[in-house]
Figure (cartoon, rainbow, N blue to C red):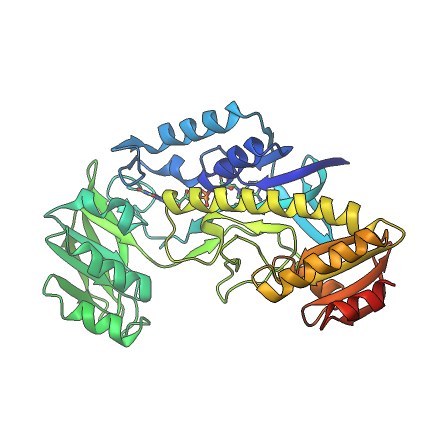
Length: 397
Ligand SMILES: Cc1cc2nc3c(=O)[nH]c(=O)nc-3n(C[C@H](O)[C@H](O)[C@H](O)COP(=O)(O)OP(=O)(O)OC[C@H]3O[C@@H](n4cnc5c(N)ncnc54)[C@H](O)[C@@H]3O)c2cc1C
């Protein structure tokens, strides 16, 4: 079985950026990709909102990102992750080419848009059919477009598209929108928006580019052709997490996105998530790369801390630990006095910031700060809440 310090699932913008930052921090990095490095941008014709690139081809940008990551020498493995498991702090990644034990894991497996499934959708993808208004809206200046869907994103994106398009048709299969009332009201007040309710798009048609949609009213059965040059499909998106087969312990939002904090930490210690796969406000290349950088540096911090804590706290036969808050002046003064006492009496003592090491605190059952503990090979022998240097002196002996 292979063992790695940092394993990254997915070589899209988030995973490749994490690889750059991870390698530059000196970590041993493995990147697993089942398709083409670059991720979703490979199916993007042009990108004009990624800083530094006024206009780039999607595949071209994907290759630049991969070349950049390769410069720092992470190992790439072309295979598919089939399952992951996190048991007793051990992180295991099972692929169709073998199993990897990893000290830290970044999940950057991205997301997939759900298609409407109508005729012509695949044929005109990138030639008028889009799944992202922020990405492609500006390419449809002064022409009519259609939006398929009736949820929050469909109605919000339709409203957003009115700043470019001459007219926006929202085509929804139900008689009422699923979107929030306030979002619908704002959109309906927009004179550029026309709703086509209880209707399904049967076909997206044209010559080389989209020219029209053929819509059937599900109540009357009547068909209608609407001339449009763009079709935006917003019937949903989902995170690529098929490999989360069993109970992973990863906290997820209702629709499956992984929940993280601002350091990209998930609910499982040492497991991070970056990019489109996580619950977030905006899914774009710029935000994915930012997530990747943050996740890699947070993983580095986690690994350094783990190493330090393991060697200094969890392995020694006997050690005293002072848990304190590094932003509390009284704790800092107490720490100085306790360290001086420990040094003069020849006791091994380590100070740990209880806020920064929340999980270690929880593991050792430290409920209030400041606290002194005596550990033997990671097991708590005794503990006290420290109110004064005298408490500490008595404890340390
Ligand atoms: C048509 C389209 C147009 C877009 N246009 C723009 C634009 O103009 N500007 C912009 O900023 N953004 C745009 N985006 C969005 C942008 O591409 C994404 O936000 C970005 O790619 C997210 O990066 P990521 O690394 O999080 O995920 P992804 O790019 O989705 O990469 C994830 C990678 O993980 C791999 N993976 C998934 N599951 C597994 C597994 N089990 N094993 C191994 N590997 C796995 C995938 O193959 C993929 O390569 C567009 C997206 C699409 C689809």
